[in-house]
Length: 103
Image (cartoon, rainbow, N blue to C red; front, side, top):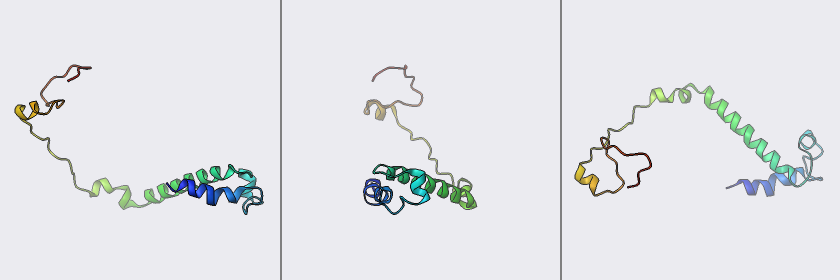
Protein backbone atom coordinates (compact mmCIF):
# COMPACT_ATOMS: atom_id res chain seq x y z
CA UNK A 1 0.00 0.00 0.00
CA UNK A 2 2.89 2.34 0.64
CA UNK A 3 5.10 1.20 -2.27
CA UNK A 4 3.56 3.56 -4.90
CA UNK A 5 4.07 6.53 -2.59
CA UNK A 6 7.64 5.51 -1.82
CA UNK A 7 8.37 4.96 -5.50
CA UNK A 8 6.96 8.27 -6.71
CA UNK A 9 8.00 10.52 -3.83
CA UNK A 10 11.21 9.00 -2.47
CA UNK A 11 13.08 6.53 -4.69
CA UNK A 12 12.49 7.94 -8.20
CA UNK A 13 13.63 11.47 -7.25
CA UNK A 14 16.82 10.01 -5.77
CA UNK A 15 17.92 8.46 -9.08
CA UNK A 16 16.80 10.96 -11.73
CA UNK A 17 19.72 12.57 -13.58
CA UNK A 18 20.00 15.44 -11.06
CA UNK A 19 18.95 13.42 -8.00
CA UNK A 20 20.96 13.23 -4.81
CA UNK A 21 22.08 9.60 -5.35
CA UNK A 22 22.81 9.97 -9.09
CA UNK A 23 26.50 10.98 -8.72
CA UNK A 24 27.20 8.34 -6.04
CA UNK A 25 28.06 4.64 -6.28
CA UNK A 26 24.34 3.84 -5.96
CA UNK A 27 23.67 5.91 -9.08
CA UNK A 28 26.50 4.12 -10.89
CA UNK A 29 25.13 0.72 -9.85
CA UNK A 30 21.46 1.34 -10.69
CA UNK A 31 21.89 4.01 -13.34
CA UNK A 32 19.92 7.22 -13.57
CA UNK A 33 16.50 7.82 -14.99
CA UNK A 34 12.86 7.86 -14.00
CA UNK A 35 12.44 4.07 -13.65
CA UNK A 36 15.67 3.34 -11.75
CA UNK A 37 14.02 4.21 -8.44
CA UNK A 38 11.80 1.13 -8.72
CA UNK A 39 14.88 -1.08 -8.85
CA UNK A 40 16.29 0.69 -5.82
CA UNK A 41 13.00 0.18 -3.95
CA UNK A 42 12.90 -3.54 -4.78
CA UNK A 43 16.53 -3.94 -3.76
CA UNK A 44 15.88 -2.13 -0.48
CA UNK A 45 12.86 -4.34 0.21
CA UNK A 46 14.85 -7.49 -0.54
CA UNK A 47 17.74 -6.44 1.69
CA UNK A 48 15.29 -5.55 4.48
CA UNK A 49 13.70 -8.99 4.19
CA UNK A 50 17.11 -10.68 4.39
CA UNK A 51 18.16 -8.62 7.43
CA UNK A 52 14.89 -9.32 9.26
CA UNK A 53 15.12 -13.04 8.45
CA UNK A 54 18.66 -13.26 9.79
CA UNK A 55 17.65 -11.33 12.92
CA UNK A 56 14.68 -13.67 13.48
CA UNK A 57 16.89 -16.72 12.98
CA UNK A 58 19.42 -15.34 15.46
CA UNK A 59 16.75 -15.19 18.17
CA UNK A 60 16.64 -18.62 19.87
CA UNK A 61 13.22 -17.93 21.36
CA UNK A 62 11.70 -17.16 17.97
CA UNK A 63 13.57 -19.97 16.23
CA UNK A 64 12.25 -22.60 18.67
CA UNK A 65 8.79 -21.11 19.22
CA UNK A 66 7.03 -24.32 18.18
CA UNK A 67 8.62 -26.04 21.19
CA UNK A 68 7.39 -23.33 23.58
CA UNK A 69 3.78 -23.06 22.45
CA UNK A 70 1.21 -25.61 23.57
CA UNK A 71 -0.56 -27.73 21.00
CA UNK A 72 -3.71 -25.98 19.85
CA UNK A 73 -5.23 -28.71 17.73
CA UNK A 74 -8.90 -29.31 18.32
CA UNK A 75 -10.66 -32.63 18.21
CA UNK A 76 -12.87 -33.30 15.18
CA UNK A 77 -16.45 -32.10 15.43
CA UNK A 78 -18.96 -34.89 15.69
CA UNK A 79 -21.87 -34.37 13.28
CA UNK A 80 -24.87 -36.62 13.17
CA UNK A 81 -26.27 -37.90 9.88
CA UNK A 82 -29.41 -35.81 10.47
CA UNK A 83 -27.35 -32.63 10.85
CA UNK A 84 -25.25 -33.56 7.82
CA UNK A 85 -28.32 -34.03 5.65
CA UNK A 86 -29.38 -30.47 6.47
CA UNK A 87 -26.04 -29.13 5.17
CA UNK A 88 -25.64 -29.94 1.47
CA UNK A 89 -22.03 -30.38 0.42
CA UNK A 90 -20.90 -31.54 3.86
CA UNK A 91 -19.02 -34.82 3.68
CA UNK A 92 -18.83 -37.02 6.75
CA UNK A 93 -15.56 -38.70 7.70
CA UNK A 94 -16.88 -42.21 7.07
CA UNK A 95 -18.76 -41.29 3.87
CA UNK A 96 -17.15 -42.31 0.55
CA UNK A 97 -17.15 -39.68 -2.18
CA UNK A 98 -16.27 -40.41 -5.79
CA UNK A 99 -13.70 -38.15 -7.39
CA UNK A 100 -15.36 -35.54 -9.55
CA UNK A 101 -18.75 -36.15 -7.99
CA UNK A 102 -20.84 -33.01 -7.59
CA UNK A 103 -23.30 -32.82 -4.75
